[in-house]
Length: 420
Ligand SMILES: C[S@@+](CC[C@H](N)C(=O)[O-])C[C@H]1O[C@@H](n2cnc3c(N)ncnc32)[C@H](O)[C@@H]1O
Image (cartoon, rainbow, N blue to C red; front, top):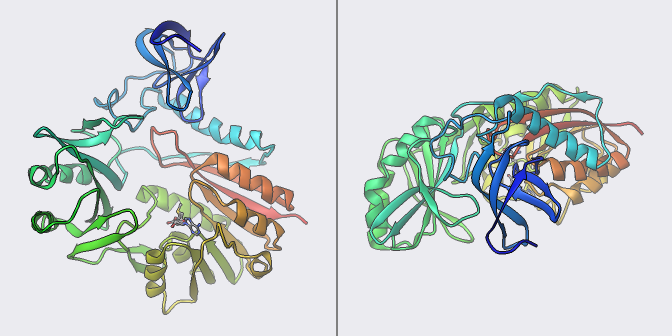
């Protein structure tokens, strides 16, 4: 559409669903990273691999009133926190609007759009760093946006400080561990004051095993595992990684899914529990290790469904003495049938980003009076909610919980009631 490396001037009109500025140009839309509506910019235009026309800012000519100075010095080169240049008021407005827009596109509305909860601060408990040895120069940091380049990060405005400080203690080991030009990912999750470390992209050798053992002895590492394409193998297990969910204590498997922040987990559980009706039998679909199942046990019995072997095993072991049954089930290929859902007083569902279209069709046919949907993807949530509404449910309330500060991601809880 545009000639190679052409420089043009644009005024940004709005933000797209992934937070990029979108400028309307006579020849079509141009997506410009890290800009705000009303920014006047000169950009170098190019076509990305997917054929999308993008603009790289050459100069910010007139800054938008919705801007602020990004608090992090790595903002320009780090691939995370792509919305740090937006002032708080506009940022929060935009996050809300993306949810409302997704509902609107699906022809949905709710009477009760609850006051959004915005969680700020350095509270991410799971972070993946990438390490690379390039001709003897070691880089440890985050990927740049849409790039294989890694930026060294010395400070992070969203990660728990303990987690970030710990990263530096890995540096002395890296030159011995890394194979030149082969990046490895080091994922750290902070659980009850200890670290769960999962490393991907590394071949196990006698030499590496010795170095990894030394890393596992650093304080306060509880466990160190290696991940390949198909599975995670625990190499060193110093302490159990125990996490409480309501009434239960679960020994987490390596790399277990947890909500990204403790505050987010608490806000989600509180919102779900406030919407849970009186009753005796509840279902938790896509239960993971039991974030909602554990809390729901205080109200009645729970049937939990989840596809991950390790999560199912951990949750089963933790709930032997509780009225909770755990089923290993792929809910995409084999959703729980509506006839089997009818007996529940309420169903909580918290699918991955892809949503749960197949399961939504079954829930839509069920007679269960209350469905509570948790989602980190407003677009797939809206698609699935539409199926439920067609099946006779009404979206009674919607709560936005922003636990992904400065990213375009947003979490929400929707409560559905069966009307007919
Ligand atoms: C967003 S997480 C929610 C986990 C849990 N509700 C929590 O809050 O900790 C989504 C969960 O769905 C599980 N999952 C992914 N695909 C699945 C499938 N096809 N069938 C069943 N569970 C699946 C994942 O393993 C993960 O535990």
